[in-house]
Image (tube, rainbow, N blue to C red; front, side, top):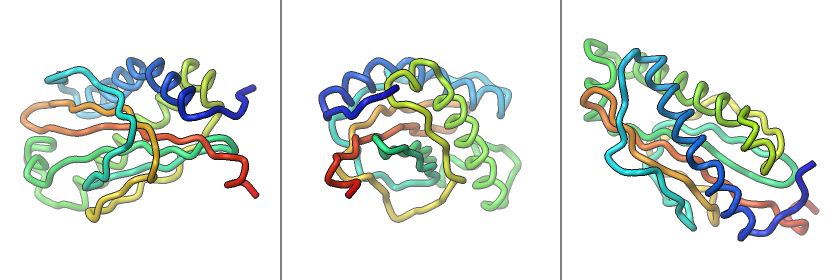
Length: 165
């Protein structure tokens, strides 16, 4: 059973699952879009999650942690992501499905559950206004597929006991 943790342990846990997150994110893209991916640089840990121009987010959590997976795609990259698809709604639907697969795969990893416990994802939500969990640690990376660049990340913070009361 996962026990309450402080932010230092949260950082340690995120660093330990970073490679699994990258694999889950890349596999989701490769399987759904049937194309290879590459990362221009390694995924990385950030002490504070950035405020991002969120395209798609999936929130999750349990009694100890609040978290969110995000997948950001610049509108200029839509055509490179899904060549021939001109309707933004269809592109956003595909981005939401990719985020669902990423979240389900990552949240199901043994390494993830060992540190953070079981979590169930919400349906994807879309925003172009920016989003953040406030003071949250984050793992993030850029994935290139075809001519499109996507930013995938997972942010999490431990819920303090006084937040539960």
